[in-house]
Structure formats: C-alpha cells, structure tokens
Length: 122
Picture 1 (cartoon, one colour):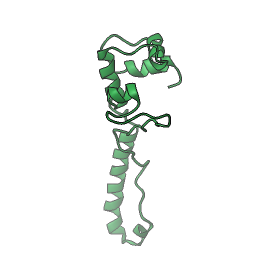
Picture 2 (cartoon, rainbow, N blue to C red):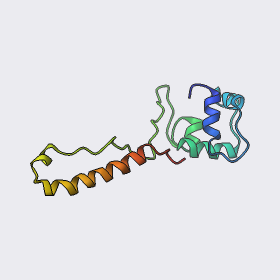
Picture 3 (spheres, rainbow, N blue to C red):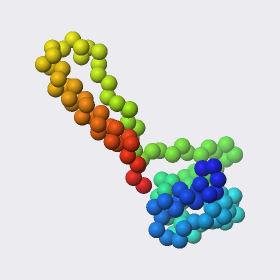
Picture 4 (cartoon, rainbow, N blue to C red):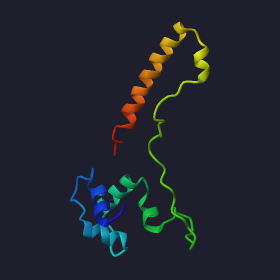
C-alpha cells in the first residue's frame, strides 16, 4: 500500500459496512486510533491474520522484543506456472503416442491460463 487512500480502497473492496475513509485509514496506520469491532473483523479476514497479532505484532503468549519481525503473509492460494512444459524425452515417443499427450497438455495449459488470469477470490 502506498497511501492511506490505497489502503482504504483495498479494505472497502468486499466490505459491506460503512466504507472506510482515507483519513480514518491514515489514523489507523499512524496508530492514532483503533478500528471498531466490525472493522477489526473485516481486517482479520482481509489480512488473513487475527486481531491480536495486528494490534500487538506477536501471537498470544509470545513476548515482543525490539527485534520482533512481522510475519510474512501466507498466501491463501497456490502459485501456478505460466504453462506446463513437456519433457524433452517426449520427442522419442512414436507419433501416435504424442498426440493424446499434446491434447492433454493443451487442456491443462488452458486451465492454468484461466486460473492465472482470474481474479483471486476475496
């Protein structure tokens, strides 16, 4: 996020309550105010993290130190290759064995392309 406005735009995407203003987002990000319960619940969902961690920077029961680093977010989806590649040994197969494999690879590549270019569900 480059600005409170970007944060508010991302937050509001999929949020059904009162939209978050860039000013309020800026206050949250600067620690001037804390979100209400409804906003907290959406933040947990949106950021894939429990509120306790968002507020304290550590998991319950852990002790924060000066050197506590933020946890890297774990994606809720898998990374897909741009396409399925065929092993070079494929060229050694007889032509009649290649065609069904080529068709299969084409179909898988269509599925991969559809998944890669589809917006990730929120």
